[in-house]
Length: 310
Image 1: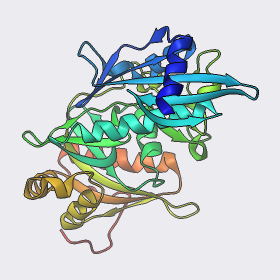
Image 2: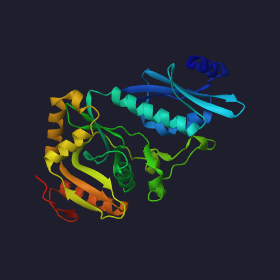
Image 3: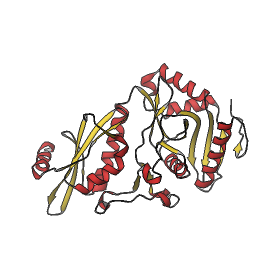
Image 4: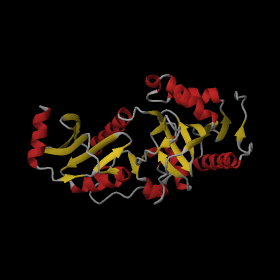
């Protein structure tokens, strides 16, 4: 049945295709029946354009019936999603690409975190979903820092450097007001592909926003707390390793190699927890601590001591 639906889409004609993209170890392309969607996807995936052969060809198409279009998404010949809403099916494309990037990049230690950089110094924000890590990264990029990722921090096991994965920032509706300045421009006709998240290309925040490989200098685990204080609390290095391991996609698969990599990472970094009630204040605290770290000082301004282990 699913291949029959795919045949119907192919027979109707898929005249539009994106370039090939390479995100870390994953290569893909997207073909569809809507030139507006290709324009939109090219904006979002621009940092990953590549000349390599794609491992996966996605098909995004629609079939008509008496109630209007139904949208379908395939990875090669496998049906991934079908829905009446185009934005829902496009979200499935983003989700699947992210999953495949993780699966195809197991030569790196992969941590569920956002990250930004100044020069070759990276700031890593490991945290579960809905903790504010994307909002924090977006606020810091808006303030002038470089962008590495808002989803998967990929650590080269040989060098300890973070390889950029500069996907479009997925900004939830709850952060739209505080990040109103970076609201993305959507191509005319592509509104039906926009759902409950903004997809913000880093270059739309600043043309030079994407950073190069960088070494972690700060590890800060954020937590959004509505109505609470915005404050930094020192985090012991053993606790930082635990947080990073808990948020790793492949820590257990890599075993002792991953543990050594995380131990080396935190030895070269200052570690904190960040409670966020106000984004601008949180960004100021992070920038102040970053300035101290880069200057080689140990300023206590804005840092609350809670007896963390060194």
